[in-house]
Image 1 (cartoon, rainbow, N blue to C red):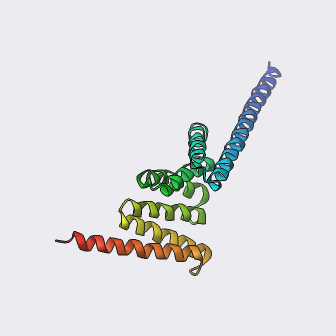
Image 2 (image 1 turned 90 degrees about the vertical axis):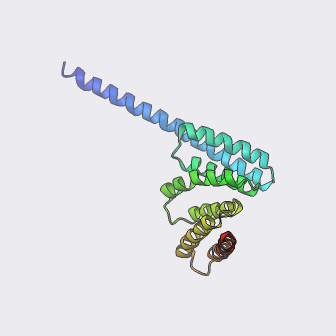
Image 3 (image 1 turned 45 degrees about the horizontal axis):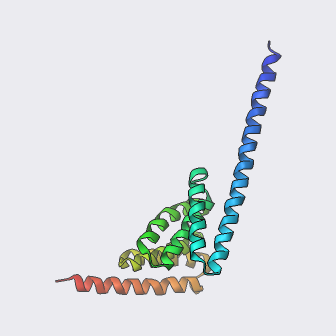
Length: 181
């Protein structure tokens, strides 16, 4: 009986390894397909085909949301949809999508990553479009700080974020001045 037990354990372990291996292969296959879809969306964006971009990104978000909701591919697809909404001046939609993608990007890439700063800066643009200059200013300040630490104070990204911060701060000041009785 004792000799049967090690074989049973071995068979169970082998089955578990094969199941994990099969799942990993399925996951890798899915990840490759999603990455290919993101590449297709990037090419469509370069060609100005926003309808294809939107359709493909929605598909990737739906699929990764079911199978890999904490993946970088899911975060990138959400971020891509946010960028598209921002470019189309659908600022409320963009802000909501950035609100979902940025925490994921921070968790997956790290808070001081330039890619995270880009999304935070783009959220600032959406907030400015929504008429919320104080929120926009906070986003631009955070993006500028990340880019400054990463690329330096004189980097183009840092300068752009600081200019946007100036615009948002000026709009917030004008809004505050006109709201006073």
